[in-house]
Amino acid sequence: MIKTKIKLILLSSFFVISAGIMDAQPAGKISGNVKDAANLSPLGNVNIIVVGTSRGAVTDNDGNYKIEGITEGSYTIQASMTGYKTERVKINLAENSSSKLTLIYSLRRTRLIQLIL
Image 1 (cartoon, rainbow, N blue to C red):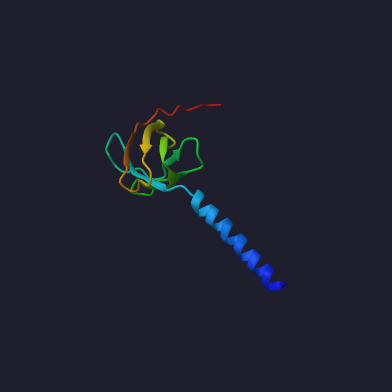
Image 2 (cartoon, rainbow, N blue to C red):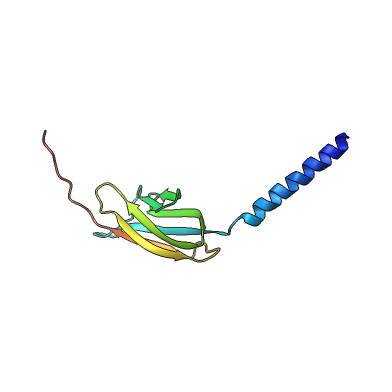
């Protein structure tokens, strides 16, 4: 009786795992570099998001970022940082694409207004 239950549990687990693997979609990667348009120096701590998803990254001190686990499709990538104009770029990611796709953003400084209260 116990052996039959164990076999049934193992068989059920196999089907659940198999269904999850078969349902999984190939994932790609978006990577790139962010630079200041004025002097082309790398910008760290820039927020990079895939609009409409929960995926995103923050650039390192060299301006590099990498977002993994992106499925095939059309996306808008947004780069934003305090003191700079937010930039958006549309991309098409092919099935199972990887580090071959690199985006370079040139962010422009925005004017900061001083408020005296």
